[in-house]
Image: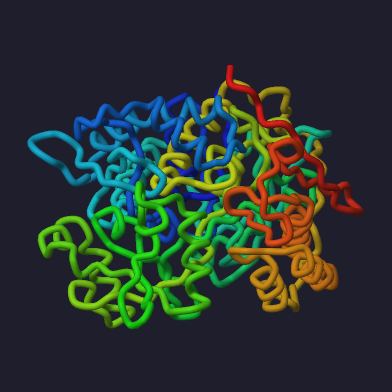
Length: 514
């Protein structure tokens, strides 16, 4: 009898897991609050990394691995990263076969562009709409599985909690957001692919539907959170409609230059301070430099030197967005930019096989802490979601056992709690966890969030306490009061656990390379 695999979330990681589980002969139940077309993965602009070496730069998966670990400041599992970078070229060729319209150079070579933290051209792209292209192909592929009866989709359903048979996950409880009907879904395994914790902050580049509530509920049930303090600020964002609009790193990959005015003259500060990579330094460094300079002068991204041909062939989506939402023609005028919260490197603690601390519960994509450590390379998020979804599904299909689906499951649905202080939570998180932090602002945030009730403030508290416990500066976590990197004490993963009464913070060694 085939196994039933339940997947929470229908973005890129969820669709990847659904395809893999169906290929492995499992019955798939795909649960999501919104259609896949509204997933955050659709918003990814810049590209997907793979060492295809179509530019004859002697690139290799080994170099991709080295760059990823270096950007991660040593906090990523090297065995998991090795697996991802080795698989990347085959994954991009598989996407081509699915129908993704990547930009090509020559007859049949995938075009590649420069991206932050990488010396080689390694980022495959479809104009500046790569996420939309990949998601379109993946949605079609999963629909074929739905048509064949291998995938059952539960749209407009939200995750409430897990079904637990003893200490083993045996499905979940979901709610139909139209009828409000609550139903149990028995399953041999659950894969969570619910996206990042954007709801903690509100004002991010991410989808507002990525509330973080699934992660918060799992944390309440005792599933540990890893590296919660590692929050990536994208260097170039613009305030737009109450959130941050992303100006893709692709703009700098194609020749966009950051500058501020000094003595009424453009000062290209990144090129002056970092002559080797200039505007394409890793995101944590670029965001911090912009943050520092912005205290003295407004910072701009100048794309006027990029040729019209490159803009029309490679950046047309970005140009259209800037004209539509900012009323700026990037061909003629620079765009003012500031760092904005963009991606969560931290999340649910998983091992190399994407297993969580609860048997038969897995996690993939931005909701889990895997592949990116203290700082993610641009172009590795789509790759990590695609590859991670595959790995989680393979693990679930092969390992999920010991579940009697008819067992009298324990179900502990938390009472519906209106978080009266959502704005207070968002404000406290934004104030405490900026590009640069310090102990006093973190303690202030901890005290404010402790006054709020609900699972989301509990998750916010875990993130704040993780940041307070890491008394050093590393990657995206930069503390004014501890400006040095301290490998002796903190070359370790931060782990936050909730025991039902209080949050405990500990540090766990990063696995050694096999």
